[in-house]
Image 1: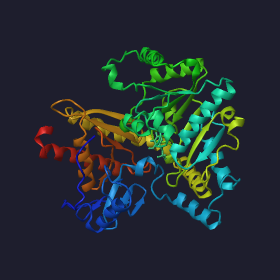
Image 2 (image 1 turned 90 degrees about the vertical axis):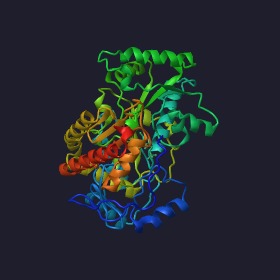
Image 3 (image 1 turned 180 degrees about the vertical axis):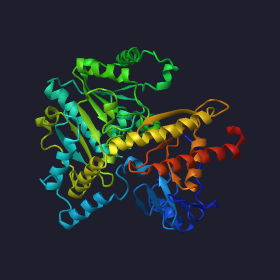
Image 4 (image 1 turned 180 degrees about the horizontal axis):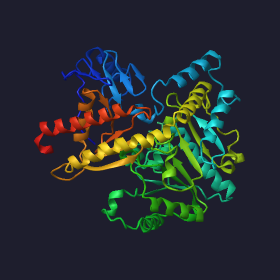
Length: 468
Ligand SMILES: Cc1ncc(COP(=O)(O)O)c(C=O)c1O
């Protein structure tokens, strides 16, 4: 993790005025300072690692502060605004729902809930026959964990079938079940235990093949399964795999042969597969769902974030026989699930994605994005170790030019300098920068953002000789 701290006192920076960016004050803008300070004063220190930009409004692919500064957004807040910020169709749907005087409905039947779910299932693969709605992504991963356990116990009629296999370091949210899946040692220490019914595979990082295109990922999968067996895992006790669609911080996809072997293994052993698509769903990677890149057929999908491009909305969708288990009926009371305003926003979002062909647009614009990033990697081979991702999701991984080791301070400084120039990117605090603009971004704005990123890299190299 980088120890570099973003400047919280206004820095004098060159002014910028283009069609897509305006920087006309010191950054952070002096008139937004009190808001930044009060955010810290009244809440926990959520600003740690967060770029000090006080958002006043966000429209399409731009973010504005109160001082009149305007940024190109390469974050979609945090992979949410797939259909663009404050999308007019979504805003209208929300306003219409507000005017209908139904703002909350608990689990009662409502038109927005039914229309949204129907549309979601219509745009999903055919195995998705039903859906359970929630507000936060972490609720949906939590529900998927329970569903897989219920399936093992009741459908497979084996009380002992409650173990889950996940991947060390994957992201599934911040509730306890999700944390158990992730296996972050610091968080497990906070809880004081690690769930003995969770076994974590090591993530198959692409660099582990050492560049060998014939590297045997199938063998690697079975080797890691054998290692789990040595830790006590018994295959006939496992009910499900919980898999983040790609490992978030580095947009790291699984090798196709690895994940296809995992699928074969799962089917052979009657183990369910849940793909956590919360970050990558709804067109982000150039396909409606990330799992489509792998040529596999999971049983459950967790979706969220870009599902509404705005209000809190998440879901577990999947096979009817799992979502119809009698054990779940009546046991899923989430006060805000299927909220009518959120569902109206979700429906409008899905309609917008369809009407504007945003999934295809994401794939097309991804070629511009990765063209630019690949050129940067060629220009800075000593600093950039990898470019990963797909569609309008990318991660740039940095290494220190002298040691070749993962480098986290450089990307932090790049994020800050780019922000001072009018570009927002996802700061991970690790050796990566993530890029995820709204799928509606103009080609010219995407190209301009890439130019700002390259300028920022170049300027920091010029400033700091150790990076040369
Ligand atoms: C892959 C993945 N799963 C789950 C979550 C949790 O979603 P939420 O923050 O909406 O609870 C996230 C959030 O970043 C995520 O990226």
